[in-house]
Length: 460
View 1 (cartoon, rainbow, N blue to C red):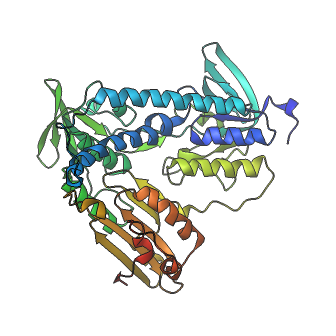
View 2: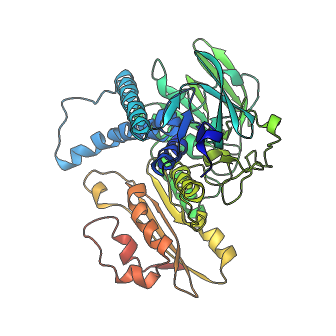
View 3: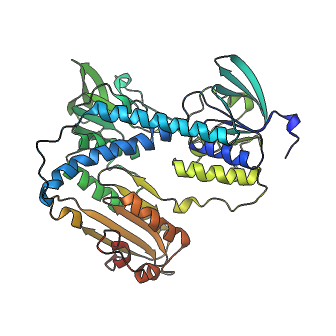
């Protein structure tokens, strides 16, 4: 480690999101002198306007189905269930404030200096901090960029009336009619959420089918289940223009359709959050995907300037940023040489209704990689829904490399898919075979046991 007197800090982190906070804490634990700068809120996108509040809203939306299902199990409600948006919204705000406090206490407990300021690169070892007490300069041996992503809204007539995913959580009033533009995680999840909470919901996507890059069977199954639950899906079309109309909005689509809605969410992607970060002055550019290029050591073109998380190439997922932070600290502050992260077996979930959980290769990707594969799948109505009268179905799927018998992909659409796939991800990451799955005794009666009792060879 360099002489501390040469620089004020060993590590200065810009951005107190999941990756930045983890890197700061773990680096400090090695004895490094660490500071972190944040001008907005502790915890970053995930805690404040991302996965945490989204999952809370998803839980709220699931109650709609639960109340409907309860009658088949003998429960009699005194009257129709009534949803109060303000209660959910305000309780969410209180929970986020609690989490912000936890993040601050974690940093303080680790001995990390927190600057509530806007940070800008001045040179390879200097950052200018702009806060309530004016501008100051701070030097560090290493500077870590961890500012994450920021929602992007395309430009079209009336696009200024569309909200982005940062703004959708705190609406003053609940929209009776809701429209989401986009085909990724956020659009699909919020379409399910607002549909479940009681909105007439529309999803608009310019492509043939949402969730590009996911397994095709998963995509098609999810489409059918979302339509079954009442989400209005509009594919192969886009928004032409939005016009305000008596406190609501008239949305004209490129296919000629016209929709009247109360809220439009533009869930059209996120871009690297580099505004006023000072990259240009240091000659740090972006790649063709709009990301900051880094090597396996997370170093940019300037070795003293590091970057991780959504700023760089790779899955834009909180656990990925956390894993990268641990890797970065091992490389730069623990003097170890860990193996590079394996990005091919990262599990993920989409909290639409029903949930999607997936790990490893899609069937399409497996066919491109391996000479021969075996596909096992099942589509069934879960026991939970037999008495309720619900027609919701579950899909489970395993993809196997025929030559080695290794399970290279696992996919699920159904209740608690994310919870179940987390365990399956360990098996896929470990390279277990279909025979290993078959020899594992299931837990009965559960939906999860289908993954170890699955014998139906769908296709090769």
